[in-house]
Structures are given as structure tokens and as C-alpha cells.
Length: 437
Image (tube, rainbow, N blue to C red; front, side):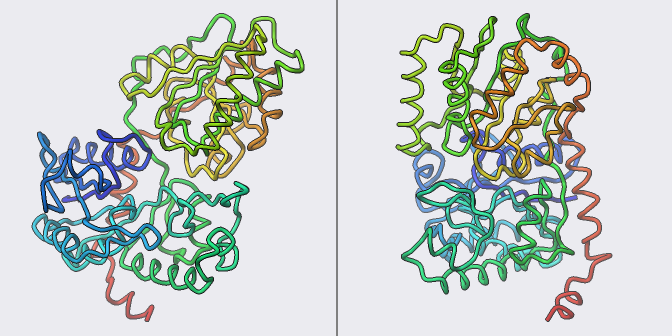
């Protein structure tokens, strides 16, 4: 099968769940003998390093079947490239490849017009779109978190969106949604990694009969790892991910400060290792809060709290960093769609302590593969950490009941089966469209 994967960014340039999933599907496809290609849309400032003057699409240096896409113009609010020349280059590349399947993993920087261009270039191809966020629904970076108050938003509407964007009339929100739904209408099938995000998009207006839930998979990096090992004190907690606002590092520090102030620290102490980079993407107010928390922890000299900031890491360093901790904390403060870090923790036999929210709540089953606490609640996390520190019996019981997460091959198999259902041989797109009209 000839497959084109289209993603925002490339994992060799910037870490991120969407590009990692897309790239691992691409690699799994090649490994299985499929004729696969990968197109990554980059940011404008990447052009000078990875691009060529005036070229919207260039081959990735030293790699076959991989391309960088540099739209010459991009409008974030409309998720629109709005540049006919860039779209023409994209369309011509698809025409040359003649794929059986075009699998979009994003529209950011790719542009929703690229979906229509792909349909024109390959009218008989199956077009699949996997959603890793909610940018089509929410203009606030697709987070469904209210600007200013940072409260969780539970439903998008013209009036509620206007409160976050008072300079945009409610009618703009309505027209934007209609335009995006029309562009997405070119897709044959929509894939979601969790029930949560699938329900959000169906509520927004995507046809339920086109929506399928397939969990994200990934390459197993823990095949030779001793999943049964833990520290002697079972008191080492780790955070893995991007050091940005909605990932919740501040909730961990809140929990530590509460335990210290209330003198409830266990005798063996608590060690927290922060593994994550990209601080430059965090907001100024958020980093001010983090710095204040760190300063209070330093000055208070609670004695039995150790915090280590290890910085960013590559996937080749994951095993080493997982080996140094017992429990993985996933304290997300937004509607976490899936949480690849949960899969990574399970890959290495690490019980997960997660916010009970969205995709995390679906995946983490208390007392089985991890534990949950109230979202954004440092006190709830503190109580859970206190209960788990030194609890070797609970660690062993949870560790033994953790199932291996989906692999990249299992993820690919599920998609291959799905795409066959929508192939021209069994699915008359024109007839379905005519009925819909």
C-alpha cells in the first residue's frame, strides 16, 4: 500500500506527541514493506536552517521519502495556509506519489486547504485525519482552557468563545466553524486516540459514522528493561514531558510545599525528578509562579524534599531516566487528549499518578495500572504521594498488573484494517456524498 503521512513538525526537530505518532506510523509502514512517505510542515523560522529560498517543499537532507513543507503564509485563527503557490506545490507532490492513503495528523501549519488539494491530487485515495488536539474547536491553542482565568472550558460556542476573544464577533466563530467543517468534509474517516476527544468533535459537528477511536501506539523501548526494579525506599517520583503551563509541574510543587509546611514529610523523604524542556514555550506568569515555588522550597529547608531538574531528554535517554524513579506523575491541568507519557511509563513498568481528567481518566485505572488525583489540586496529589511513598507492596501489585501499551505495529494494523473499509472497492464516496447533499 502506498501511504503519505502528513504532520506538523518532525520529531528530529521538536518533540511532541502528534509528530512522534505520525513518524512512528511512517517507520512501521516502511518496516512492513509499504511504500510510505512523510511530509512535515515546519514553522516559518525553520526555513533558514532546513529550507531553500523560495521552495515551499524540500526533501529532508539525508533521508528518503521525507519532505519538509514550508507554507509561505499561515493564518492561525483560520488554520489556513492561504497561499496558492504553497498549496500547488503540495498538490503536485501528492500527484507524483499517487498514494492509496493520505493520513493527516494535523492541520496546524499544514493548512486545511491541503486536505482539498490532496483530494484533487488523489481523487481515489482514502483520506484519514487523526486529531491530536482541539484547534478546530478552540482558538485558544486548542486547549479548551479559558484565557485570563485559565479555567477549564467545557463547551465551545460563539458566545463563550467571544469571551476569550472579545475582538472577534460571535458570527466569526460560527463562520470559522462552518469553513473548517467543510474542509474536513473531504476526509473519509476521522481517527481519535481517546473517547474524550471523539465525543468533543462529534458534539462540535463531525459525523459520528466517520469517527473511530484508535489508541496511539509507539515503538517499545523497554524490551530489555527490568520492569520489576524499584528504589529501596520507593520514594522517587518523576515528571516527564514539556515544561509548559498546562503540563502541571506547578501542581507537583504545590503538593511538596503543602507536605513541607504541614510537616507531613515521610521519614525516608521524597525525591522528585523533573525531566522536561521547552521552557521558552511557557508563559511568563507561569514561569514566575514556578520560580517562586522553587525559591520557597529552597529557602524553607524542609530537609526531606529533594527536587532535581534534569532538563530535556531524547527517547534514547528514556530508559535511563525511568530507571531512576519509581512513580511517574502526569499532573496535566488541561484536557489531556491521550498522554503518550503514560504509555512510556507503562512501557517501563512504572505506575502512573495522573490527573483524573479527559484521556488520562480513561486510561489510568486506580489500583490497577496507576492512581488518579483531582485535577489542579496539589492537596489531592500530596495525600496520594504520602500514601504511596515507601509502599512497596502497592508498587509491586500495581507494577504486576500493568499491561504493555499498544505498539507501533498494533496501531498500524488497526489503521490498515480501517482504511480497507474505506477503499474505493468497498466504499463509493461519490454516492455517499450525493446522498449527504
